[in-house]
Length: 544
Ligand code: ADP
Image (tube, rainbow, N blue to C red; front, side, top):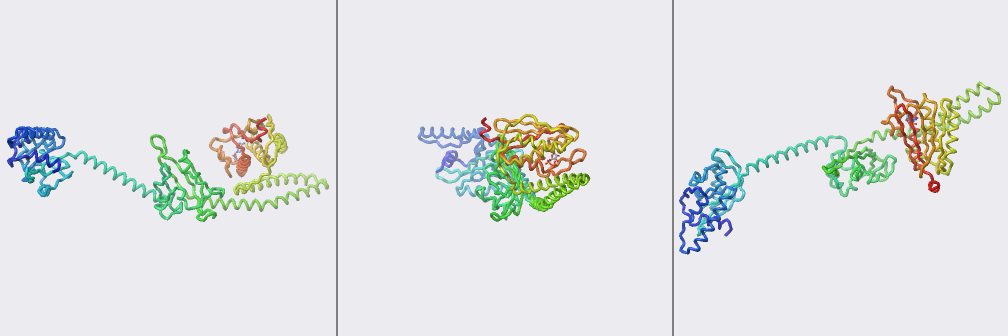
């Protein structure tokens, strides 16, 4: 016999089927129930004690506890039942249980009674009951059959818990979940329609969302395929290439860099389906983090923007520049040769006028030669093939010779050298000369109202430092990093762009960086500019 059966049995011990008369306390109701006079006083005392205890428990319960007979007549009704349903015990006891069942659910009571007759217990049955003032309350019912001493089912004990608030909360929660799901579905539909690939990674580098476009861009027919791939290295079916055509290291993928602590990362990545084949697709991949309230990375969002068309157009342009500069090089070189021959003839003929025109022609030819060789350098840089002939050379000597040459070609500015580096540099002397000429000619070109350029020379523990200072138009901060990019030229606020191709500084930066140095600019608009070159001095010199 189960515990609750035992209790119910005690409750209805020797029950009369008469409705229990309303003692105001339900506890008393149960006590009144125990009418049996046992010959053994001690046994009777124990039974009474047990019943008093039970009555006290029932009375103080927060759940409504009601008992009824098999005809549905209520024969006990505790405090909690009074407060839940509004009927006082004396009003409820003796009434049919339909007192608290809404008419549309009376059929339910028949089913409950049928189950009870078979001895089946009902657990946490959620239904509606009605209060004295007609309010509907949502309740959870647990109903146990009550048996007499012979084990015959004679009634039921019903525990009713008010779940109206809980249900209301459940509904609110469900609504909120519904809304979130709806919003997520809508967002999903929107993101699926976006042409950019979108991948969301969790902090452990697992993909938690990817749209269709991302699937295609990373070589999958479906995003499920992309999402299921593990470990993350495997998610890229393609061979990845950087802008220089070198293999793209997985650790440098933008989302990896953000997971490693960068605030934002981007990279241009070429995707090729064949190992060692040229990329068929190019993307600009940008990753940014989403932080939790503690400031730790929660997710990384990666946007993959297809730039195949742009990159292919750039490649065609690079190819054209490379071919054009190669084609131009031969005629320019032979023109230079003919100028030399012609000068000798005109010299012999003492043709002053002819010599004057020839020297003008030679100057223009030099400009053309410089242009062609710059364009060639640009193509070489693009292909990673800018060659260097390294040797140790005296930097101060190179600078003074170069300054002298540039000075000879300019009458507008005085170029002054201040200080010394006293450094012997290991590198390509001609390439350094090229950088210096570029900085000096820029200083002159962009300071037409000034008449001075200063070359400051110094050194620190590890570097020789060359600074070229002018007093010209200067460079606004927004352009200062970009001027080292290929073909970048500044258009002034009045729409003026100086003649040039915007490649000199790009080549200079490449040369300096190939020598493990760096180049920087310090400037303000209309306040001149200072370009600084830091060149590493060989170890044995650095120690001196
Ligand atoms: P360009 O052949 O156009 O001079 P560069 O690569 O040498 O190409 O320079 C890029 C741009 O940087 C120039 O177009 C110019 O706007 C700016 N710039 C370079 N040097 C200076 C300078 N000393 N003062 C002001 N602007 C400069």
